[in-house]
Length: 71
Image (cartoon, rainbow, N blue to C red):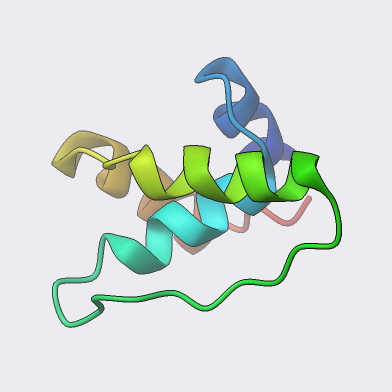
């Protein structure tokens, strides 16, 4: 998770925002249901929804996941 967290942070996002953007990058997905208990979480969810991952970014994330980014 540390590598993915750092990767997202380098792009001005959190790991949670990356998770939402990742799901939304799937062509078959049109909606992600999220919860929020604070205005900050609502803002983070909006930032995530606005983050359209590029093909290059998707490839980078896939490579990290495949290589074991949970270290």
